Image (cartoon, rainbow, N blue to C red):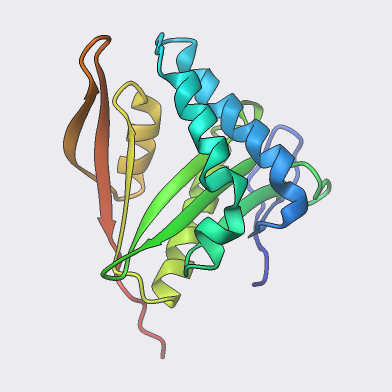
Length: 186
């Protein structure tokens, strides 16, 4: 896959490159995931967050290629063009039945948010998904993650339902989806 780039101004004024995950990216991917989760926990005390992070590290994040790439999905990272070793964004697409995919592990480094990196990651994921026959992308996100929910809505996703995960303390996840429209090539 050819890396996709963006020239939207970032804090260090670098172009952004989105490329597929490589095994040597794993430690930074894990740190970015944990940091992203902890950014929300500062505002919302969730006694289950540590268990969620630990479970994520034992399951899909311990085998990114086996969870995402091998079964027909993919996992991307974003880096500044001038520092390809610095991972500033991640997103995964896990293949599901019926030509659907679950968008997972979306995170942008807090110092690089609001510069179009998330949009570039989602656009890359959607373009790839259409090329590979996916018809729908869906995800779940915490109800407390209002900025994330607003971001997905701005990208054309629709909230379709709510699941109560815990009553005490109350924690909800929001179901969000987007139908993909295949591009017609001339």
